[in-house]
Length: 264
Image (cartoon, rainbow, N blue to C red; front, side):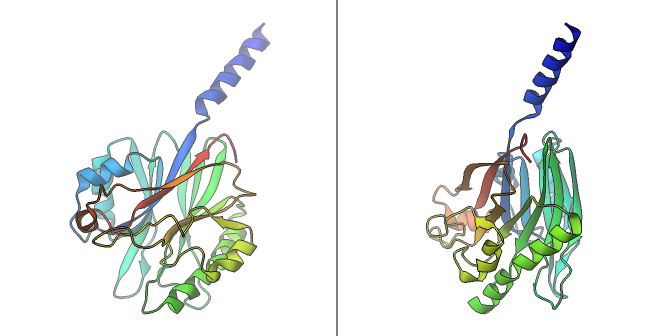
């Protein structure tokens, strides 16, 4: 009888910890430099469990944001990336109740100055799910060729962090400044990655009058990331107030996927 009670307790325990995690990516546009409607921003972010942020200008602004989100949230931040004249950070916001372990692995070690802002990887563990998140913020530059060049190098980022960490479950997400349909991503796709958002349908950036381009995306190796539930989307919080949203929140929409943390 005692054996059955222990087995039942273990079963119930696994049920308690198994849950779906909403993972998001958001270019928060000059966080720490431009004016923000923090009340609206925290309302948006609080709908998600783990959020990769791009374009964080300083850590002070991130501390302020987490304070507004409340004690439920914490953050991990990368070292600064960028040029001598301009630097920013990648960061991961997360609900403490959803994450067992998280830390910054470090920046991609460039071979020949391939990126204006080197990608930085974060290890995240939630229940049985452990993964490497690599937020990115690609160059916009003067022409599409510059963007395509960076896009073609993300396969090297994948290989670098896979070799460094031994982790197969790698998710590359963020603002690529180029649609995922561009042939520059072909080699990454040949290495098993798929873009989750459809660039023909899922617009992620804002003009003053409406949705503009599909620059943000999430790349997953579906053979390795068994936790993906096939639920995903673009969170449109604009309510047709595009100009105001651009000014006080961001010129990007938040994108997300759902993962089940019972899977690895």
